[in-house]
Image 1 (cartoon, rainbow, N blue to C red):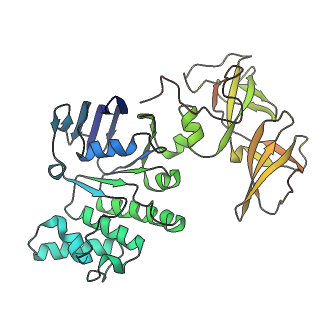
Image 2 (cartoon, rainbow, N blue to C red):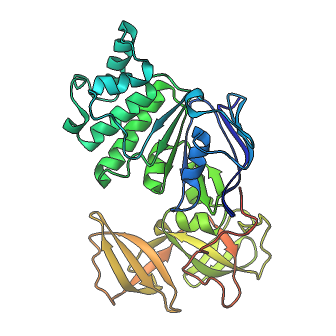
Length: 374
C-alpha cells in the first residue's frame, strides 16, 4: 500500500484554480520532490497534503486513510506528518535539545533524551544540544529543524524549500546530507523546490509542475533524457530545439548533420511515429554538440561563460539558429570566432514542428500542450 495517495486534487482561491487535478502515489521510504517555477502550485499542494488547507475536489490518503476531501480535513496535528519550513521555525528561547524534543511531549523522559541524542548524532550535531539557535550557522539550524521533524517518527516528512536561505555551495552539500539522513531513518518525504539541482540531489522521483498540473512524474534520469513535453524539456537541464526533417530508417537531417535513431522517431507530445518527410524540433543538450577543429561545420561564438574546467559556449549556426556546447576550458575562443563543432547525440527527443509564427528553433514552448500529463 502506498504511504501517500493523491487522487484528482483540485484547489482554488476564488475563481483561480491553483492545483488542477493532481494525482500521485508515493511508496514508503521514497523521497519525492515537487519541482517547478514560482506560481506553479507546488507549495499549495504541499500545504494541502499537510492539512493546512481544504481542497475543492479529490482525495488525499495516508496509509489508505482519507485525510482530505471536499468537506473533510483531518487537522495537521493528527496526520503524523513532520514539517521542515523554509525559515526553520525554531524556538529562539529553547536550546537545541529542547527544540528537537518539542514534538515528543512536554515531560522529559529517559527515552526522550535518548531519541534527541540519537537524532543530533544522526544530523551531525553531537554535543551541540546546549546551544541556542542564534549560536548556530544556517546549515546547523536546518539540521536542527530536520531532527525536530524526525523526532516523533512521523509517517511522512514535508520539506518546504528547505535550503533556499543557504548559499549555493552549502545548499548542494546539505541536500545530499539530508537525503542520507532521511534514508537512514527510513523516512518517506516530499520536498518542494524550484531548484532542479536540489531536486536531483534529494529525490528518488520528481514531479515537474506547471500551471497547477504535474507535467511529468518520473525519476531524474528520465526527466532529463526523456522529457514528456516541451515545458519539461525546457525546464530541466539546458538545451535548445533545432529544426530537422525525418528521413528513412530513423534518420533525422539537421543543419549540423544527420542523426540516426535505433527506433522509429516519435513526437513526444503524442507518442506517435513521425513519417518520413515530417518536420520536427529536436532537443539538443550541452553534451550533444562537441568542439572539433577538424569538422567542416563551423559556428560563431556569440557568448561564453567560464565554469572552471569547462566553458559554456552559445554558438550561432550559418542559418542564424543558436546551439549550446560545453567545451573543456583549454579551448578558449574569442567572441566572434568561428569554431568547428560536431553532433554526437545518441538518442533523439523530437517534438512536433510549430508552424510559421509559432515557437521557433532554439526556444522551447513556454506553455505545455493542453493535454499534458497530470
